Length: 98
Image 1 (tube, helix red, strand yellow):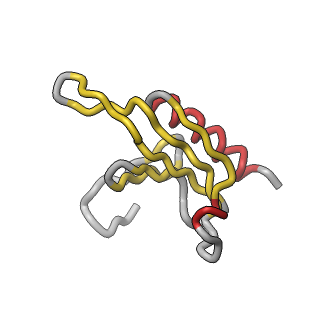
Image 2: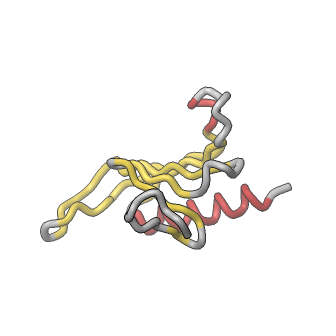
């Protein structure tokens, strides 16, 4: 797998996972849908910030749509684990639908 840099590409359940500040993107922009997860609240556990509230959105990747029109589904979850679980199910179902 050639990469543009030496950074390791993260994947979750075979799909790309990218992070920009407090936003995580799950899926590929070449697909019809992608998941956007925004960490809206954290708490300190020892010396680490842990996500306590995460907004999950299933979105179209169509660049011609306005950002508010891209959102297909939206929910809020307590913790990153619950958010990733919902994200994986939503994305898999959306991409496998005919």
